[in-house]
Amino acid sequence: MAPDGCAFCAIAAGRAPAHVVLDDADVVAFLDRRPVFPGHLLVVPRRHVVTLPELPDGLLGPLFGAVQRCAAALPRALGADGTWVSVNNVVSQSVPHLHVHVVPRRRGDGLRGFFWPRHPYADDAEAERTAAQVRAALAGPGSADGG
Image 1 (spheres, rainbow, N blue to C red):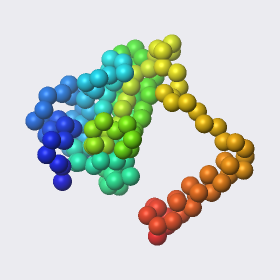
Image 2 (image 1 turned 120 degrees about the vertical axis):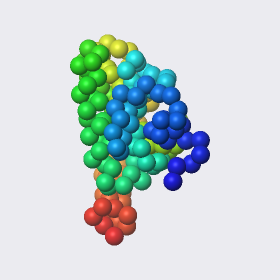
Image 3 (image 1 turned 60 degrees about the horizontal axis):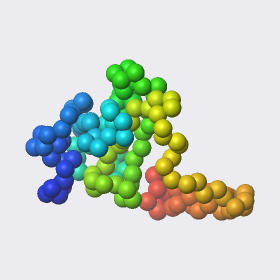
């Protein structure tokens, strides 16, 4: 159930203004009010879901199908060279409603990879320990193929 005051639920329900570019039964896409570049879109499920891990399986296809369509449309519409697609889960998630950013990119646009410093592994052994932890979590309770 959507909490009162969710800005994205209000947009999806048509109760709040937005520059909507895609509107279907499961998903709405609209211009971000604080764009990285003009054309920066937010693609949201109509259903109130806070993070990607909480997204029901039945909405995965509709949501990412809409993301794919938007990522294909932005270069055509705006003459961009490509797009950047990202999702924040909890950390840096300014609105607690799942939203996928689709941002038009141009060569030389000033963005340099990710916005945070890189932290390389100390050595191959540390990388393997990290990979083993992730593999165990993927196979354990709550995973798609584990308990």
